[in-house]
Image (cartoon, rainbow, N blue to C red; front, side):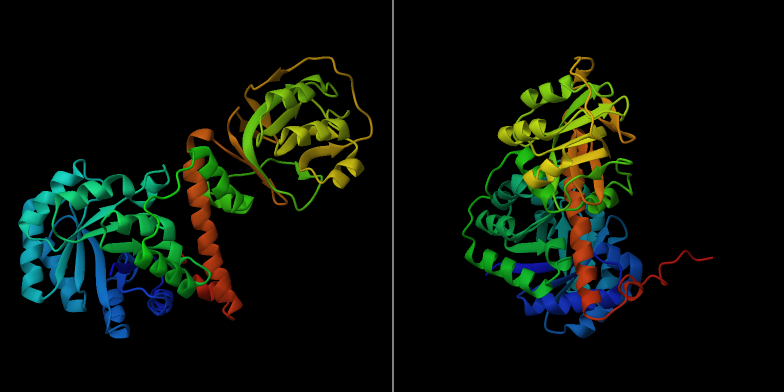
Length: 426
């Protein structure tokens, strides 16, 4: 039966213990004391997990790259059953780590993360005598769209020791990894940051035991980006972009509507609605029309243009300028965000351009950049970083969901995030 290892990549020890207990109740087998937790709490984190969960295997993710014997000894004496070191370590470091593991009664897992030749390195560390190898795509690399499945089968075919796998695994991907030969499935945020830790662990436990999905469903990158962005809010995205600002002064005309799509940009003069209407013909299904006007005394958008957008399947319209017919637009329920509402329109003179770089609400927008808009505001995601930002925003959401669950149980926000502990030391 495949092993489910839960990675506690947290910095608060008390919270980590609570989550570990729920994960074990949901079917997890091994508890991993993640690197952030070890850096925060030191060996005390390993000791506490050993005392709290005597019947479970405790893994210490040291990411050791030097002083192998010393760090393995520290972990083993603190109660770790398995110590993780990096494949980038020198053979001598790995050899020393293995010697210390045999001396103090624990095992060694080698993490292949970021190694330039992971298959050959997996063969070599097996020769040296390690107990497990781990195919691992790190969090930052996951944001670029890479998954451990791309490498897993090659490593499984190359070695005879058990292969672990880690890197953004959900139930479907975890199941596919087991089907590809992984014996240990390591899951972090999709359990640890879940609002219901036990239920999430149960879902992944069931998936890897049945291993029904031989391959994850293949969808395009744009489809995956859209799916992720539909699950998050503009505040999540702002946090994921290091508190990036949204468009200034742009507000929803119809509240409660969400817009996600690629930008078709328009630059036009105040009241000149020719290019804004022509952009409807340029835009495709799911796109967002983003309009920058030279002023806002006359409307460049109204009900009839809105109806045309709906016929094309356009996701929404963002206007740094004026709109009219808002009573009819509200009845249609189409998402439009604008700077100003006026009754008067201008004339279709045809000045301006479509699909050029613009500055809308104080934020640069290029054709193809991703737009997400909701009642909180409008965020622009550079197209080159869309997958990464969408993944990071999902991580922000999962983290908030977990905090929300603890607040619902009666804790204060300061208690949950251990605010006073992490204030800057003066």
